[in-house]
Image (cartoon, rainbow, N blue to C red):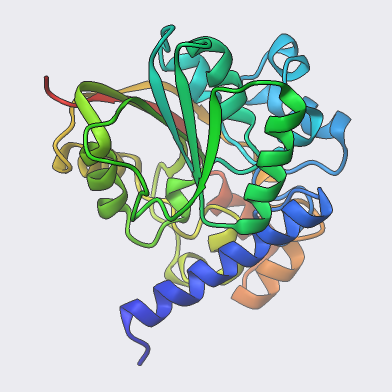
Length: 284
């Protein structure tokens, strides 16, 4: 029997490999097919997908095109109430889309830090930072379970469809709590479940990197945030997440076949996925 640590390491490597490939090719995929987990095949498709999950056309026009890989499930920077002069931290920054939007909101007196565990993705984000002309954004290599950020040093934390990929979510929220200043705010967009999915689907590597294998039940997700010490935990937005944005028509047959279920049954399980935006605060 594999240990929990061995399984976690295997999943982490799978996730890192998929994101590295997305960064190198510019073909977004956090799942096994080009359009999995909010992915799109071209800039136009990616922008269309991003508008569906909460980005405005004006926001998409204000960032480097290569910053949008279509990997999100919400727009946390728009919901975080960012103010000029604040320090913001993005967990799992990817190519930088939310960092660049946050940087414009905090202004030149503020600062945005993006953390990502994939070197190839950081290379892309840093190139985008140079293209953006923004000097108040930096990107750091690190894991969201072990943030390379000092205690009590940031005002706001955002994250977009990343925490569900962690195999140690309680630690992610404890780390977020650690680096926030007293009175600081957390705003995360993530995928969760309305009802349990079968163990076989939950344990599938394909389902995990497609952002559903590691997704928690909605209530369990909120409990983890409270257990980390956060208060005023509230769901700001909640919407059903289209199954075709989780696994597209090319990926679904392979996943269904490996799990020994029909595509119709897989689709019913995928209908349990919801996109949440959750706000919380650190007591001041």
